[in-house]
Image (cartoon, rainbow, N blue to C red):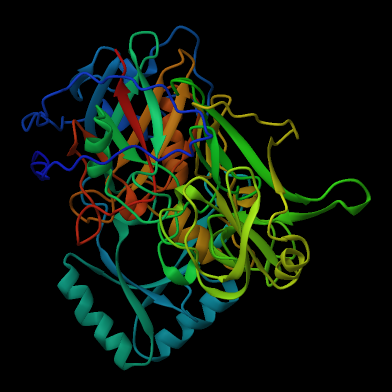
Length: 561
């Protein structure tokens, strides 16, 4: 079995940690022990994995059983994997999980209306049309995996052909296209069918009892903009770094690089929650993550006494009117509920921009109020302009713009209150060293697989293809979990690379985390964003053709002694 390709070398480029307002308490500086970058072992990195394969193999352990007290699931499941001690209390493992040999092939998935997964009647009709055109279609049922918050039939896919090579499948796809069908060439290793596929995994295990350091979240140089995990890791002088939360990719969806969900760094909220979605709260040294479903509500207050007025602040550091992943407040369209990879809209909003944004506010119709560090209005202007480093800007559109024009009088004071609550409505307070990164869905709860497709917004009503392609099918993934011993499990899987690694479906990832002993676990951003760096060097294989993808923020393990 071949070892993974050598890690690409990157020129060192130190980036400062995130900036702070002068009135915001600094996280105490902690000298880091300089460490000489080292390459990961190139030999014996992948084992025969008779042991590793049991992680996902049926019958390897009681289905969805909670971890047994006293067992060290990590040592049991990762025995025989390539291992490196990164630091006292920090262990890195690499290995592969694979299905049975010869189980996968190339095929053509025929779409209807752009959808890969179809209702039963639509699938049968499409198969009939294919037969009339001289093709031999097959329909395949796709069920919700065990451990999901729903069950039964998700939909049917319609396929044509079984091919050993992609080029052969492409020849047939062209014939289907010529006959008027919309066909997609696919590798079945990515389907998520049990006992198939291939996943190359990297598992970092951090033991707070033996590690003298911290797990810190960082957006790099600015909230807006994107940076590679390797660059941020070198700037942070981190032992280990990996990508963290969802973020905005394209300008049409908001501010590129800004979080698409809750984000807080050093106690300062920098992005509002996708209300109800899970997030990781890192308190103090960050070594005991709290995985909690969070919501945010922000309010701006003007005046006092009988003249007092208040209004909802709909978001933080995003384009007014655009809510990536939805889950906001107000009359958001099409929904106020979380809806992954959907951008909701709202014509009436107020959005706050912080000094950490790192760029000017987005231009457009509406009004902006510029505030100093005490919240005093220093200017009222059209939208689009700089954010004071020690202040903020409130941007309003529609009725939000009307409210600002009425109450943001130069020289007056506007007070903004942020409130974070958990699923039980309890307020979540942040200290000056606390961070939050977003993600979703939840994977493991109380030691059992519990993937909440519905409440997380991964399942889209009337569109089974969304949950199928993003959640059920195998993709590159990044997971965060904690086990009964208090250890942190940071896991990545390469994916979308037939013959090298297909990745994991969300339920497969949940089962992997459970068998590693996770009591609670969540999904972080994945796909082309998945990356892990050790001593500033990439130890995972990116799925994007361009290589490592710049991301919005990351998690970084750093020495403090």
